[in-house]
Length: 189
Image (cartoon, rainbow, N blue to C red; front, top):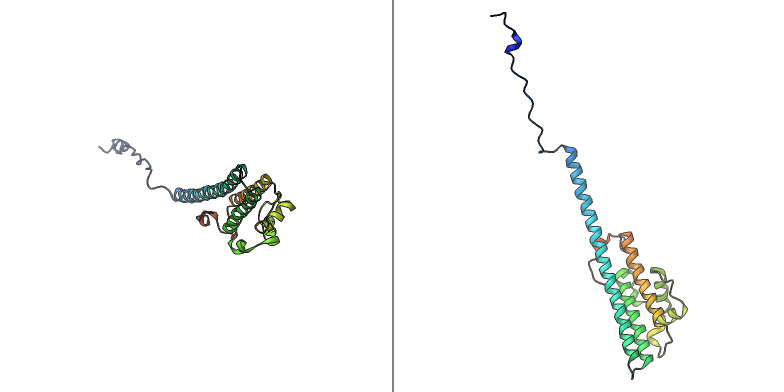
């Protein structure tokens, strides 16, 4: 009996249970948390960009309304062309001031007038199309009785200035105060 093979009495090899999916290793938890943070950051940036584009399109629609009203008033047979141009200059100036107030409330752009307003426009946006006749028109627009202003040039300048402010905000991801636009861009221009 003792002469029997002792190895034949051993049990067969048992394989361990297969490794399960749950719970994941700590490295996977870290990767999951990093992925969630990245998703939140990209989502907030996307929402901020979308809001800035929406506000920009609203401001440009306001500018387009000014042009449409001017064209309608200037095409009427009994229209006073000087009054139509003066109204157009004042409406474009009002749109520019509202956009400036939205972006730079700390600078109090609504209270600026004359050369201070033109200096503000030149320092805070792309005012490369703001030549001297347009600058004089915008600085003294509401006080004149007659203006020989190129309405297309004024529209292009205002459009470029407004667009440059919003594109700069979208590109930088921050507003004028230095806070992320995903937080600060909730008001309407």
